[in-house]
Length: 562
Image (cartoon, rainbow, N blue to C red; front, side, top):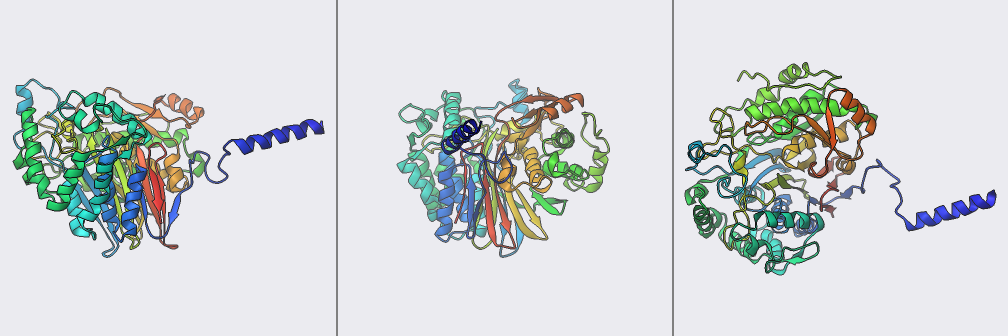
């Protein structure tokens, strides 16, 4: 008997020495440890971009410089989710003034495009691709606004790393290569797509070296001439002429009139933490609305992924998204009742409608009044940046202006063609936006800069990350690695009824017992891969003066510090 036991133990020891072992610390779902550093931290969805940010920090640049440099690199290396043809939003913690600053870098619709055009052409919806959904790209102006207010290095120094990679090439990472092939196949019939995003007609695969000399030249001109090259100079003329040739409406005047807007972030308090989002035209306040409803329910650490957890979050989401569909819009064109929507009083009224044991259906409350990249950087002086940037549907509209190296966004698709809708298309109006950066403070001190990319999922992602950390006691890497869930089915922001009403989709890792209980409560539940976004975060430990970084295990990204 002892001989058999010895043989078993010997075999077990061999297995342990030749296979990966389970993690000895933390939650079982964690993929890796957090990254911890004293002087600076960068977390992006592409390792080379993360390294560029760290190099900028080591060179003496601050978090804002590094964030712009990383975003420029991602426009080259991950054009499947971002680029200078898209928009940008950011929240900045400025260590000197000890304040948060919000930047809305979203572009507006063409001045000559109205609902009447679509009626005249018998179109019931704004197309997803082509020239018609193109709105003014706001990213470049946002870079220069951030740089003018907070930057320290020159734009030449900031853009140089991306220029070098664009000229000399970089190897594609795995997930980006997957989306790159799909995107090029989707858009190949449009002009200049193959010329810009393939190598002699061949779409690059994982590990292939890709160069984008057109984008290198565009970045060089931005470094040399500034934002005006893009909005009033040669690039603007190329964009406007190309879109006109394709039958679109974006003009030199539209580009020349564009300016980003500094806005005041808004917040609610969740169990002692102040959670900050930007006001509409983005959907950030949906996360605040959800948290305001949820915070009246106490959760124990072992209730993660329980039926009660998923049920309460889902019911809060349904309510917030009904309000989102009815009220969220460009605040320059619409009186959005932000203060009331995120108030305690309104949350109390909405919460009273929830049945703790049964799935509900809700309409918007009565008020008295696609892909993306997310990155975050922190520096040795205590500055922190939460930045999100996108072209909307993956690469964007399919419209690639000749020899500029990027695709224009299709964010205008999100406008409603119902003239009574808050988000109705109008000339010179900013569309509803899905991309939202977030920030957390406590006692007026920075705690965490974070974001979760992924279209409509983003407010749900913000809520789940925060609950994982605050309610369920996870560290910031575990909080991102934990299995996620998503409710799909509320009305969309264009006012069109969604095709899929009321299903909770889940990742593997949610217990079968939870699924069974949710089904009994009246929820439809199903597995669905790939719809849960991508996450980066930096936590600042005020007492020990250290940064803790985390990066999304579902993407190609990396957190690094020094």
